[in-house]
View (spheres, helix red, strand yellow):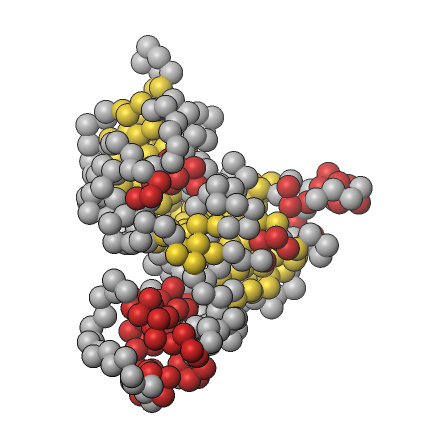
Length: 416
């Protein structure tokens, strides 16, 4: 489990240094078309081959070919699509504007996560593609104008406007901002008093999970302070409270929103007949294992398209130590099936977030079937192999940081 150097954080498929993604609102000059086109296509595996002629007028290749290239770039990655549109005006005119409005699922940066907030500078943030290992640098000015509440599994950032308490979702790659209702009605009396005294409310609000529901038409947010699972659509005037029970973990998966607590795994149900959203139990925990509401916790994981649950348990056999068991969530049978592996993947797990990455091929320093733990989840060990129960002890911090260190840091949540 030896860590890689900081220069290798983006893996063998990407450049050693994170590249800056073009600002989608600030197009490149047409004189740079050739160099930007080459940069946008570097190390990409498109299904069409283009014989690049250095003297050809690439800005005027026609809407048909340019539109096809745009579709292929978007199918590959929204970051490639942003690079494509940044080349010139004719290429932008033949491709839909990702900032045209709404939470369009085509433009969600689902493969991207924001890494550390401080190491790259006050307004320089690194984003990692968990599928390929590519690392890019972004400087979204919106982060300086809002309070960052949480990161979503779709790659979006949940932000708060302090003066109005309006919540927003930011797509960091396209710079699309989506307004959601204010949290004013959800606040505790103490938070209202703090606001009246001029305190920053964003520092007192704690979000433990957020995601999109029903083809990105609805947003679900799980607050631990003020407590409550709430939903809203863009344009709504207020949030709808679904449940006020404590949730160990929440996760958007396959277009639906799942929650886990002492009862087991539940799904958020919505209907077309104006019935309020509610939670429905889909896998009872009591049929599979005992659970201490005081000492244990449950963690939902999207393991490369498979919904899994990790039981974090406090063992009392002679010493206080954590153990971890994994289960596959069988939604058809409604059961939790024990698992001894992650199908060649590894899971980075904090108290509120979990990320699954491909081991070995994409991340040479990451071991398969291993849970790498955030400091908020287990300060004693770095990793736990669920196949044999072996533990990997913490190693002395080194600089530059390894990919394991960076991912263990970023899953701890905002401000941790």
